[in-house]
Image 1 (cartoon, rainbow over the protein chains, first blue to last red):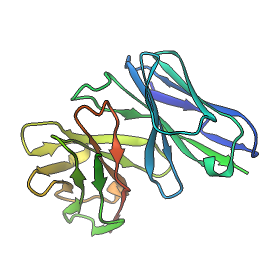
Image 2 (cartoon, one colour):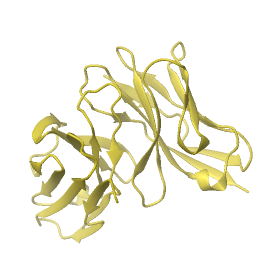
Image 3 (tube, rainbow over the protein chains, first blue to last red):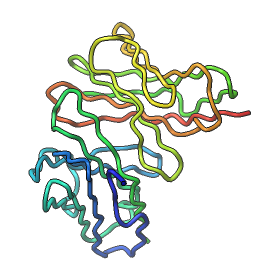
Length: 115
Length: 114
């Protein structure tokens, strides 16, 4: 009955590889997000999609490409992985973009380690 | 630009004592404020939020937070701490007209000891 789920939970890969992280929500929400948490636990938004349309893109390198096949899924594809991409990536969802009572619900995270 | 500050990297408290985790904010309009908790190797869990109305907001697991506009603060409180409350706590702010972008503080590690 997980509300926001991510796969895989752990991802270890070599520099230069391309990898994807998948996210799914079963809350019926219209908006989904990707956040990055670095080694110092600092959380920063990367992207937001509302009903499959990109609405937030926070100066993320274009090696990162989100894809939303439908409003329940938001995947993150990363090309040419670099050491600095090592982090925990969190997916989140909320009912409405910009709704003042909107609450974001987070997935369990994907720990990406680039060697 | 919206921002939040959590001045304490770590807070230590004895079980049964009251706890406070501090947060101050900076926004250009009325703030929408949130507290989240992160247990080890877990995602963030929503605790409570302030949108408007009563300055004392009650949330999950016995937590509450007090919104103070004059001090631009939104401190998280609990009357009696439990060892199981030990976790990383994040304050976050959303600015009106800023879409749904949440800006997080740097987090405060709460350690509750017997």
